[in-house]
Amino acid sequence: KTCILWNTSDGKPVHTLRGHTQWVNACTLSVDGKLALSASKDKTCILWNTCDGTTIHTLRGHTHFVTGCALSADGRLALS
Image (cartoon, rainbow, N blue to C red; front, top):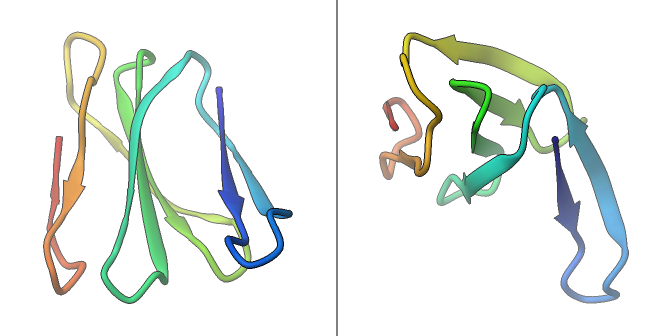
């Protein structure tokens, strides 16, 4: 139900991203690292602000759980 954004230099969590109501199946980061996208068994994807850990958008429309996701190089499109 959560994603954790980790600092790779010290191994400590930066933010815990909470918002899904079921398991998270996939997540990805934008090229610049400012956005994260997560896909869940709850049939949603959530677009996150990695600077403060807040939700930007909850993307709804799937009729079954979401198993994967991706962001375009410029971060303007999400694919699930």
